Length: 61
Image 1 (cartoon, helix red, strand yellow):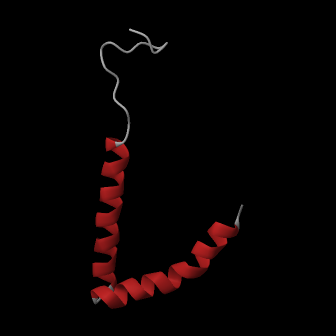
Image 2 (spheres, helix red, strand yellow):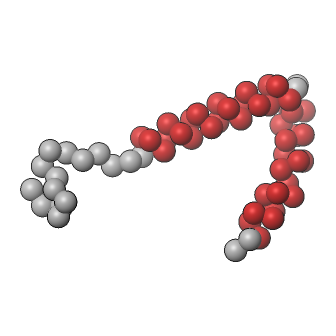
C-alpha cells in the first residue's frame, strides 16, 4: 500500500525540476501548480451531488 507513495516521493524532485525547466523558472512552475490545484478544487466542488427539495434522507420524496 505504501508503494505509490514511495514512487511519488522518489519522482517528485525530478518532476519539479522538469517542470521548472519547461516553464523557465521555479516561480512559474509554482504558478502552474497553483492553477492546477485551483482547477482540481473547482472540479471537486462541482462533482458533489446537489440535494433537491424533493430529496429526503430515505431517498424518497
